Length: 435
Image 1 (tube, rainbow, N blue to C red):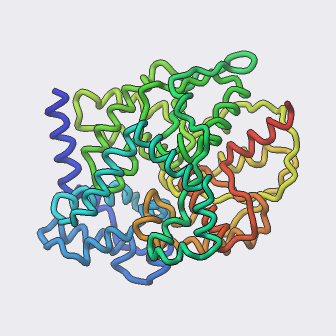
Image 2 (image 1 turned 90 degrees about the vertical axis):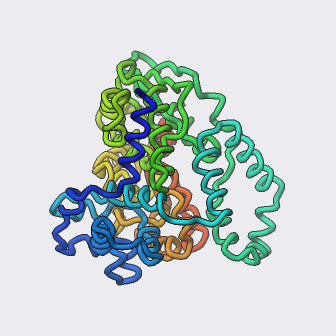
Image 3 (image 1 turned 30 degrees about the horizontal axis):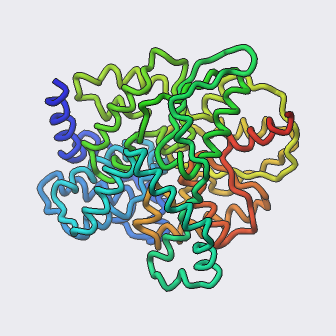
């Protein structure tokens, strides 16, 4: 049965956007100003409305052309248009299904196929490969090679690879992998039993964030279980059009954290959380997993969403800093969570919070978009940093690891030396001062 359902789910993803979803767009144009690529290029075909028009044409028999592929590829999938749309068009689902459909028809070069298979099908789902890659990154950085390339300007000789190198995360040793499978007791009376999904790349590049997340949860009466069988959530595969790979990873994640065992299933990565909350849709046609996926998604919470919903321990010391906040697209538009992170920031004594203009517009990260479409992502990032700099904040916060990487690159290129942190790291800082 599981084998037959895999075929059904895969065929659903590769069939393209549903006509009923496409028909919900009334072409009013209210999405235009919310779209980063339209704001940059001013082209109708690079707006949500324009892309939906093209999807409709393809659904009704028009050929898949290089221009169509380019317009679909150039979309960040930030879903800002969903917040702006009065008709409830599920644009995130449309763009994912359009890309899954394209994967059945486009012809990629050998190197592109190899790179996508290595990253999206092998690396992200393998702890051993991630640790090998992380060790290589650590040696590159600890040996001083990265610093020499950057300071000397030699990195510019790498061309496009040099631009991508600016986005390289820091390998944080020790990695978080040894903590997977452990259970961390609550401090004081246990109020909740939660599962924490540590992610994939985050175990290398955001090990300290994961540790801070566990500490903040413990401080607030949570017994924290790091499920041993957890892995990649499939978000990047889904965004990249690899529907069946995303479904495979979703099944594994549902099995890794049985919903009935926890009060909540938590993630500190907004991009992952958006996909985790949509497993019910992703596996809706899978008879073996439909109900399990729905129960799972019913327990999934972003870490800021969860912490803002409980009574926080007030034992914090002041953090004397001016702080601003950049909304992660998949938290603000995918999950419709905007007040929770701000509530947590304001709960920290000593903090002066200043709203960033257009805080909910994309920073240009968008999964691996900043690698694949570096020029466009860099343009978008420059505008974002103009807004961040205008606040005069010394701490620049977000709630998604991908955004943190992008914003750190933004600080190096256009910033004023701001420190970039996750919202949970601010809480951890305030709690650590009480010890």
